[in-house]
Length: 321
Image (cartoon, rainbow, N blue to C red; front, top):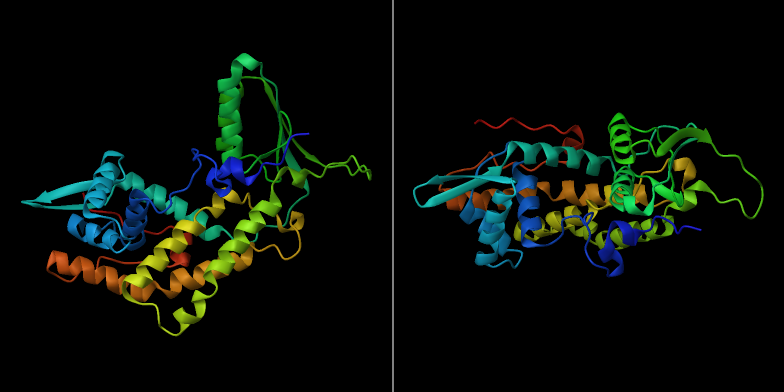
């Protein structure tokens, strides 16, 4: 029997394994820089002096050299675009990066929101490919994984949701006639050998990740309510909680509530995330504005943090080009 679609396949470092393609951005210098710039300029696509970005990264223990290297690499990857004024350089998110981050923010904000009532039907993808077609087989599996499908058996992948038009096109291109797709209901055999479709997912592993997140961040809530987290500490906490919580749209296939165990911790994790991310918005924004203003030599109201609700709406101002 095929093993469940477990956590190690999606985020290998959860089990100490090697990083894979699905590894989300973490606390690397590039990951921190991208998160910081997105958290405070995604709505306005504002320019930030490179010296301000370096100073902010320095508050996370990133050296000046590593910070400047990370900025350069983000620019080469098309995440940032640069501008020079004499000896001074500034950077902002590119249009494509801002759009991608806005879409990603919408997915992050939707984590924890209950889905519509489930109709009881499963989408079943059945495929068979010869061993010499391993590249196509891997591509098909990757498309399915990215869309929340899991392997119930070898060559049989399932999801409780209808297949999107985009995934239909990806599956058709990857499989080239070696695949069949159904929408069907499960028949309960009332026997010990009857495997539940939901067992294709590693629900205990996902729940453990949610519970670890809740345990780690809940103690901070009382300090935020008391206004005791300010300045650089507010920026660090807000950035770190985002870097950790952003994994959940990848880890959690967002199965309908009907299929989940009682007391599933997704909603509580979302409540903790919102309380911290939104609760630290004002002190973190004030600190980032202060750092940028000191470098720029002027007030910088264009440095604007956003709430989780604003991320869900995906709203941003268009940059001037």
